[in-house]
Length: 254
Ligand SMILES: Nc1ncnc2c1ncn2[C@@H]1O[C@H](COP(=O)(O)OP(=O)(O)OP(=O)(O)O)[C@@H](O)[C@H]1O
Ligand SMILES: [Mg+2]
Image (cartoon, rainbow, N blue to C red; front, side, top):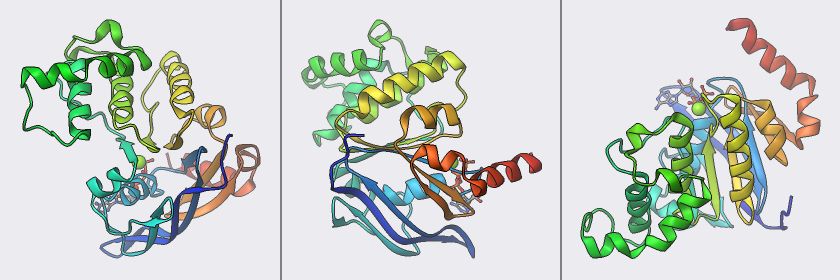
């Protein structure tokens, strides 16, 4: 809501073709700095592929991507990350044997370029303690800081993943289905958490839950079969006939 005039992310005619299949098809996307932008659409619409393109995990077949005006088309993930773009994954991807504290510490080390080489060097492990505590507190995991991630409840794992994204101190956060698979209580907790961490940042998130989208997003882009179907404020998009049809179409095939 506190969007500036600047554009954080922009794609122009962004396209990804997998063996003849257009997963992302000529997408023009504009995300304003400070905005919370939702990306929605039926399964297979190309949302995750668009995230993969935006973060350099997949390179585009054609089209361009800019981050704060700088062309990052074809750049590798670490090069895009260096420009302040961080993402979380649709599927939980934690080290099950490491504690929350250790994983946040690792994320902070990665950020300062020490990477995994110094892993388990005692001096370095203590180095980020204050920041680790802050991040764990921010996502509500302080009481569980020393539990191996494998023993955390699902909602807690997702909270830890948000802490790992936050550890990168990103200007732009891309969250792929932060509430997927959660019960109502965890969903509401996650909405509050994302709202808090979105302050002063630009957030793009994918979610199938319209309650989440309506609670968080100031703008919504609806993708269908790789193309932008509708784009606008949530209040307008939710009532759009084409959007309703796209979702009902999906329900018919379920
Ligand atoms: N690496 C790949 N190789 C071939 N096809 C792919 C690849 N990645 C994605 N696709 C295809 O591209 C289409 C879009 O997939 P994508 O994962 O982006 O959809 P999505 O909108 O994130 O769906 P969901 O809501 O189920 O997560 C799908 O048909 C998928 O099978
Ligand atoms: Mg997806």
